[in-house]
Length: 140
Image (tube, rainbow, N blue to C red; front, side, top):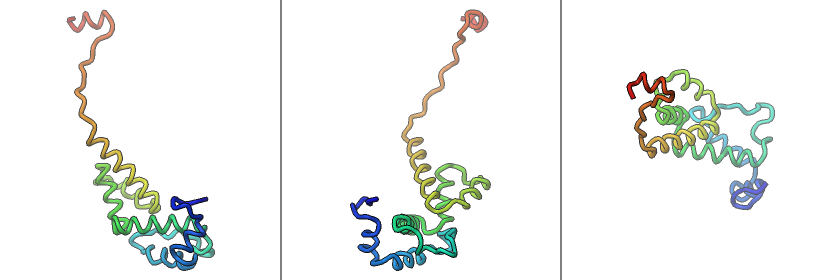
């Protein structure tokens, strides 16, 4: 599988980080308690994950840290975009999501919020009676 830059994941790891262990340690440094839910297998660790997965994980963690700073700020941004800031059940469900999924939910919420702003408000049309009996009853 080639990445967007045209390199294989192994070549991208060597080019950007030198080796897989350095990439895994960079991910460990980014994966703080305030940003990351640790769901990695303790026996295998990050070193046993594929290069493609580690690269994606590093990019997701970097983007989230740069843009939001913490998971709680990301969850609050999603709640704000969805106009559900007082919905405790939705907030609790979002807090259980892994970070990549939260970023995907945020992306979708941004897209929906943008389309709501751009769409003009349509005036509601009066209901027109369809049957002859209903039109007579309505006085038409």
